[in-house]
Image (cartoon, rainbow, N blue to C red):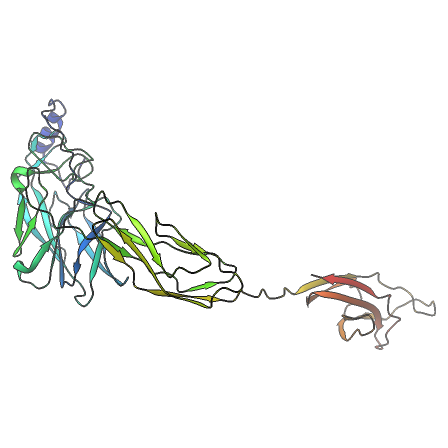
Length: 403
């Protein structure tokens, strides 16, 4: 059910009685004419403004991200709040009412006497860059019915954007026709074609609509390719890049590459460039160009280089040796040991050169852990020490291989 801010008693009566109305639709309203949660290709060019017709559904939705992507890979993100199409309008900054309609269509195609709104939004974009696409919020409850781009504020210099290739929402249906694909609000409700017609003029701009029966010629969609391939690869590590392509519906695409690195493979079906450089690969593969064609149009990425870096040298991992011993109880002359103070441990990488030494100042200790040992063979010996700082006889040398 669409979002309702309040329901009067008379409206509730209408909604309940509709449960018993027979379906009067004779033709399915199944032609998508609006977009939600998708990326819309824009006519390639430099524009100052982007204009949208749309609304939120199932409630007001605030701080939604609209992302304009340019052909150089940079983006502009605009946050916009949208009012619900059932109202009441929230007058969010950047939002204005494009059209107020006295009724809307129910899932059966019947009219419902409830005001429906369509809002206009205008975004400033970077006119110094060439636009490529508009990515809508990842939110089915935000839907766009029409898009225009303009070079200036002069309406005559605006261009309507064709939504047919990415349309996934049925927004406008004829009276008496049931909508499909969930309608405008994903609950089966939709705008009336009798009220909207084939175009809407708002704010000095004329937006072309894909309403049923419309004969408005769509703006031709341009084949576009984009992506930012990594410009470095490393010996022994896998490298992969796949471009993003926007093409007219029904296009059969073929990809090509010029100056492909000898260590890489290229997929002519997807445009993927991938592979693992080996020792001896060229230091730099220059002027690589990935392109795409649909037979009628072609597009190519700017030439790029890939510099192959040496394999990473894995640093040696420091090792650890754990030593244990038995606590002595007698002196060398056989008398009881009563003044044990601790132990001294000598160690090194040669049994004849135990150049490292540590002390354990605890008479009760029976072991110690020696860390930060480099890989290789290590040798150890231990002796007791008394409170007079006199060392006893060292133990036999033991060894351990650190890997």
